[in-house]
Image 1 (cartoon, rainbow, N blue to C red):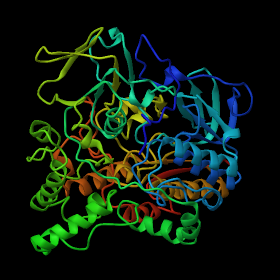
Image 2 (cartoon, rainbow, N blue to C red):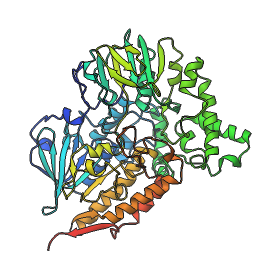
Image 3 (cartoon, rainbow, N blue to C red):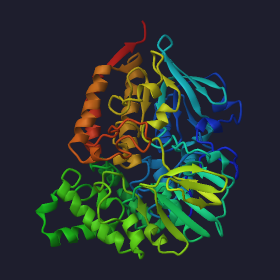
Image 4 (tube, rainbow, N blue to C red):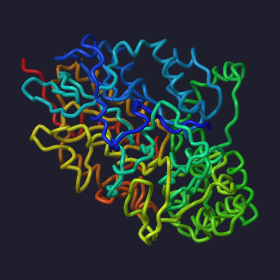
Length: 564
C-alpha cells in the first residue's frame, strides 16, 4: 500500500483542543442551490457517497427517479482497500471502459481517482451535497415521504431513503479521562487531517491494531522518531501481494470482466475464489502444507476465504490453519518478546473468525529499533494527560503525536447515528441497543421505504464490498421499480418476518466458530453493544437467492397502495 493514513473524508485542524468524534460536528452548508437547497423534494435520497451511494444513484436515476446524494465528507468517499482489482470495483460498463488502476490494491488516492472517473462519466457530484450529515429522519405515512434533516438545519423530503453509510461510518473512541488535556496532535484515524502531519523525529503512538492501525504502523515505522503501538489483541494478518498494473494488461483483460464480475457473485465472499471442496483432514500433513503455502503465496484473502471448507466450523481444523499462520509470521519477527506478543504460539481466538487485515511489511516494522509494541491486554490505558498516556500499572508514555485507531461502531453504528425514527417515534439507536433486527439485511420494520446496503444482517464483513452492494442494490432497485409501476405508496417489513430473519442470521452463525469471541462480526469492540451476529454467514450467492425469493409477492412486507 502507501503512506496514506486513512480515508480523510473530513478536513480538520492540525491542532484541536477537543477531539471530535461525531460526524455532525463537521456538517456544513456549501451552497443554497441544487442538492444543497433547503426544503428539497426528490424521489430518492441516497445517504453516503461511496461505492453503494454511487451504484444506487446511477441505478435509480436510470429508472427515471429524481435522486440526490447526501455525503458527510468533502468528496465522494472511499476507504483504503483490502480487496483486489478487478473484483474491487463496480460493474458499470461506462466506468470500466474509462478507468484503469495503478496496482491491484488501490490506495486512498487511487480510489479518489476512481470516483473522479465515476463522476466524469456518470455526472454524480452535481447532484451530491457534500458535508451533509443526516441527524434526523422519519417517515410520514400520510404523505408517503421521508422527512430528513441535516446537521446544518436543512430539510428534505423523499419517497425512498437509501442508506449507503457502510459498515464503518460511526467512529468509536473509548471514554478515556483527560483525553482533551493532551497538548500534542491527536486524532481518530478516520478523522485524520488532509494535511500531512510530520512524524520525523517525533514520539508517536498508535492505539489499536485493526486494519487502520496496521496501515499507520507501516507508514510511520520508517519515518517516526519513535513509535509505540498499543495492542490489546494480535492482528492475524495475511500477505497482500501488491503489484503494479499496466494499462495494456488491463485493457486486454477487460473483455473478460463481465464474466469475472458475474463469477464473483457465485463465490462465498464475493471474490474470484471460494472455499476448497475438501475438508482439512482429507489431505495428508504434506498435502495440507503444500495447499496452505499456495494460498499464502497467492496472497490476499485466499488464506481466509479460499481455505479448507471446514476450518471455520471445526476446532481441530482451525488449529491447523492457525499453526501454519503462526509459523509463517513468527519467522518474520526478530525479538522473542515481540514475537510472542504479535504472533503468539497460543492463538488469541480461532483463526478467521475476525476479518484478517492485509499487510505488506507490518511485522517487519517491529524489527526497527525505533518501533515497539506495548501489550495492553492486561494493562489497559486508564487516562491521558498533557504529555501522553497512562497505563493501569502506573507507567506513563510521553508522545507528540497520537493516532487513535480503535475502530468503529461497526455495521450498525452508521445507521444508529443518523437520528432515524420509526413511524412509532422510537429511535433506531434505542431499538437496536439490545439487538438489531432487519428484514433481509436491506430493510427495517417500522421504517417504510427505507433500504440499506452493506450494513446489518447482509453478507457485509464476510464479503467484498462492491459485490454485496450490487447484489443488494439491484434488489432495492427492482423493489422500487415495482412500487413505482404498481401504485404502491410504501412497503414496511413485518415484525414477524424480521424475527424470522434474525433467527436465520443466528442459525447460520451458531453453526460456525464465529460466536466464540467478541469481534466485528459479533457486535464489535464497543463494550456496551449487544453480543450478536450482524452478518449473513451463509455466503453471498445463497444470500442473493434468499432475498430474491420474496419478489414479486413481497413476502414479509406490509404493502400500502396509493389511494384511488
